[in-house]
Image 1 (tube, rainbow, N blue to C red):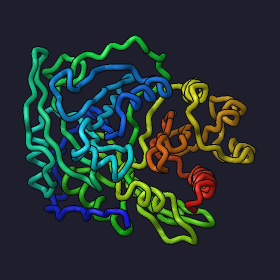
Image 2: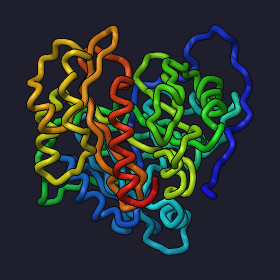
Image 3: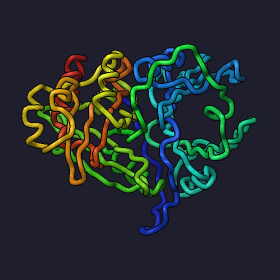
Image 4: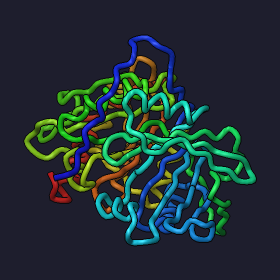
Length: 379
């Protein structure tokens, strides 16, 4: 059975209060991987990330190697153990490649740690200051679902390529960028009946609010279902949808994830672009594989969403989905899993006013996922 870690007991906060955890967005996302050198090359060549910084034996780090890659406001850190008997090696052995840390940018890392731990958050890292000749960074952190952690990063006084302990990484190979701009949201998969406890955790420990709820009637097909609640911080810069399985005739995508990841974790990362047609065209030419919906999806698309700026044939050719809410519309597409285990994948999203998450596409999307599950023998 996959490992499920219960949400910690929290201390209820007053109903009305100022934002005790002001977040400035996502600082970086760290992946624990089996081979960081190769993973970094994949993110450069397939997704257009640029080399930023490196940490490893040459920089005094004796137990791991890390490569930081970035594109506009997105930074990924690929970390691998260089010794067999190491907690990172254990993580990779159990889960495969996956997200370890969603690092959040703050003005005061010490305050963020104090405020969250006093409300019931389990400490991952007490505040510590890292310094070099380019300034200082303060880090702290707490645990969330599975083995994922949130690291609070205070970096206003730092001018280096990433953080102390890293050196500038300037290889000869640089692939062109693909137009990815920022992290739009990160989705977590949790175990049966664990969604609401983790919703409570984000509300009471981190001051988030539940802005959208989808039940098993919203997200279901003939065979499977799931439930999801979207959590957002006070200023809306950070959004974390949380999924849990729901009863169905066959195994849902969340159940498949929990089985093959062997526990709860980050299911997908959505990255925003200003021109999804150009970005997806580029990504497909680089070999990135995307889920496809039946061509009949596009027969009624304009009747459902109304006028859009993009040419329908281009969307159909690329497999891009469209949905509309009261504030505008969005365009989105999802990759197939980027690991051999059917776990982590990415979403490419362009928002044209819409603040929702594509509810009108759920059925077509999840039927596409089920076709992939069936091909793997996991439905």
